[in-house]
Image 1 (tube, rainbow, N blue to C red):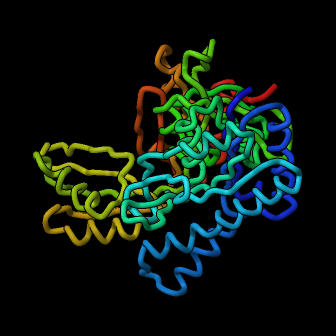
Image 2: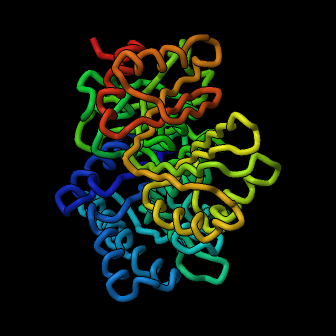
Image 3: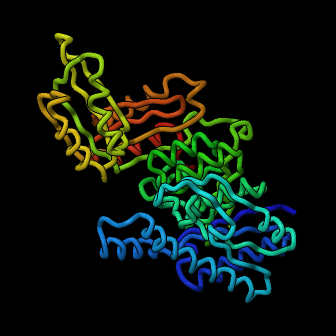
Length: 406
């Protein structure tokens, strides 16, 4: 007997028939003798609808009331899921975040889980009952409902799996697993059987949409075995596991890309201590995340050009912050564009192989693709290129690193 957490995303529970289909899949695990906790998202499109209603009422809404509104989508789904299981003679009960409770901090709309009391859930599971938990939500220290940010149901599921000491956390979605790159761009993309936490974390943060970044961080910290599977097929999925569970590491495991990028260049700022803090301090205070950074020193050594990227959704706000601090920063000219894409290669095998980055640069050069910015870590290399070359770059790199399916 195993204890399993099964999480189903919005496309998996998009309507009543799909909820019934999910219930049948859960019943199979129960019939196999497993203890099962189910975590569900809101029906596909429902959260966007609720957010739209909140924006219509008040664009500058109270985040505490926003959480009350958007958390209601999961409340509907979790009740329907419990009812569907009961109709199949499977003992089941729904649980909202505050009922468990899933305790979070007070950062409404982007709360972080602090603890989960599993006392009652453990009793129910041991008694053979399926516990159906509303994802994406918890309760703040002042007893107000909180939500975990978009995609937060993944985090709910992994956190619950860690608290329940589950054998595995299965994340069900509309794809059959994690692929070497986006199959919509590269038809020869392969499904990966096993991938390390570190590689999955890089893929998630660099544009792959299969898992939420915070959920992967939590899985890595608590060593929760995660499996990404399709709700609509019985194909084996992708296991996200410790590095030592993978016998032979690929040099490059996957290619990720993100169009959610914008580039800002400050021309001729002073090349002296404190300049970077003057630029990036106000951006941090405005909660604007800066990603790639490159600095070019001028010939006379007195000034420098500073180029960096920010999320495209924060582009205009970043420009306002920079322009509002023009006198302090003392730049000569501001150049900016949002017509860029970040393309990345990821693989733990990079640690033990040389020439990986060179192959990337040579491959892009052969295709006539200019690299604007470069950033690296131990297991990834990212480059910023013109958006028009995105698909060409991804396909070329996928082939260059031998990732194409036979």
